[in-house]
Structures are given as C-alpha cells and as structure tokens.
Image (cartoon, rainbow, N blue to C red; front, side, top):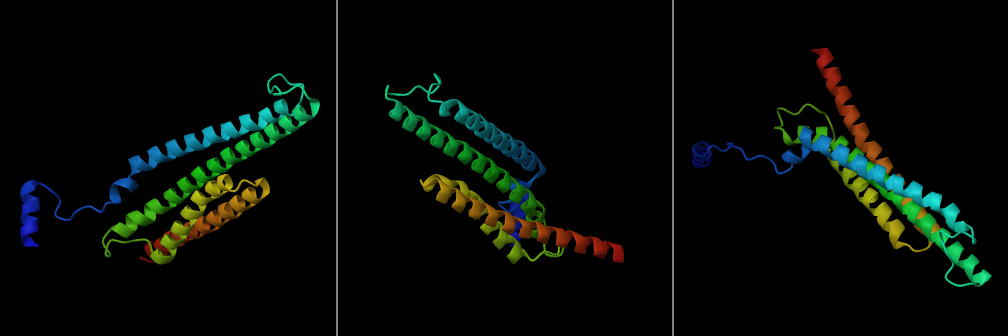
Length: 197
C-alpha cells in the first residue's frame, strides 16, 4: 500500500484511482448528452410527423405521388391500403424511438446526482437514498425503455406490437418515477438536516 502511494506520488498520479464511472457523470458530459439526445428525439419526432402527413397523400388511389404498380383498380386499392398501413407503422416507430430516447435521457439525468454522491466516500455522502431500490429501479426502467421500440419493431402484427410497446413504456415511466422519488426524498432529508443545524 505504501509502495503504491509512493509510486503514484513519483509518477504524479492520484493516490486513489478514480472510479470508471466518474468521467461519465461530469457536467460537460451531462450537457453534451442532453443536447445530443434532445436533438435525436426531435429529429425522430419530425420523421414521424412527415410520415403521418404522407398517409393522406398515399391514401388516394389517383395520387401521382404513390403510383400504383398495375392498372387494375382492385390492385390499386389494395396497394394504397398497404402503403398507408406501412407508412402508419413507420410513423409510429419513429414516435416510439423518440419517446425512448427522451426516457433514457431523463433516467440518466436522475442517476447523475445520486451516482456522484454514491461514488464519494461514505463519510462524504449527503443524499439519504436507498441505493439498492434506486439502482434496481434504474436497471428495470432502462431495460423497459430500450425494449419498448425493439418490441414494437419485432412484433409484425400492428395492434399487438403497439400494445406491448405501450406496456413496456409505461413500466419504464413507473420505475423512472420511483428513481425520481428516491432522489427527491434524499434531497428533502438533506434540507431537513441542514435546517436542524
């Protein structure tokens, strides 16, 4: 132990190595991720809106924008119906992806202060949070947020895919609220301690 401290001092390194997660919870990384995730979510939402607007164009069998592959009227009706259904599905997946990205960003923003406090020494910890409940909720919320768009894309039947995705998104939101409640409770206890002094 003493030899390692002397070597660290000689090489100009910190005596105690920094935790691997510390660089990912800095303020610069937080701001960059907020800008990046909001931009990505906005772009996907824009794709969803554009896709929904094209449904009206393709639903008309006489439209030149969605030309029918054959001249038969029944084939044209079926073709435009399939095109509208496919476009609706694409628009919905863009919307689900946008929500998932923003949900992951919200989880990350909730984790940063708690993880920063958790990585400090036990004497320096200020937030009174049940870390086990907090991190289990974070894992479940993150997994559900990632699984929601994957499930939507994996299940070909439209109503079943949308329902499964909606259930997973709801579960992600519920567990995200649990993490936010843990953080809020820890901050309130911290305020109570400071006011009692």
